Amino acid sequence: MALSKNPKGGQEAAAAGTLDGLINTVSARHDLAALLNLLKTDGTMVCVGAPAEPPTMPTFAMLLRRLRVTGSLIGGIKETQEMLDYCAEKGIECMHEIIPADYVNTAWERVLKQDVRYRFVIDVQGSLI
Image 1: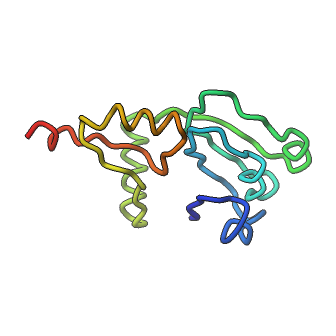
Image 2: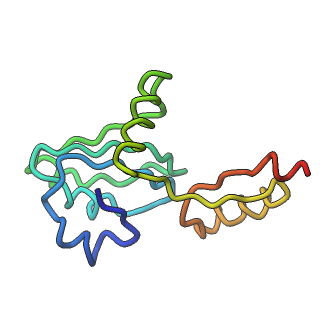
């Protein structure tokens, strides 16, 4: 597993051509070519983030290396439980930012400015106190 903040350098550069699969969670405009470069020939990238504008696809690189790009919203209860069990077993944790309910408008402004590093989680219970 590799966590990426900048797919053009560091550990990502060393991982070029080494991954069978990649889950792309980015919901803002970003460089798909850099992420696809991480995949082996016949690799698959699953996009679960939903950018406002369709991404530009590096078609030629995809054709030469037989890469697949697919998308998914969310699985059913069974698939979600399997994913949670796998993450618990492997010690995989999500990166998120917990915010109070009264911060939602500011959070949305940050999304529009592309100033968000992780997904927001609204602390509803803590906001009701």
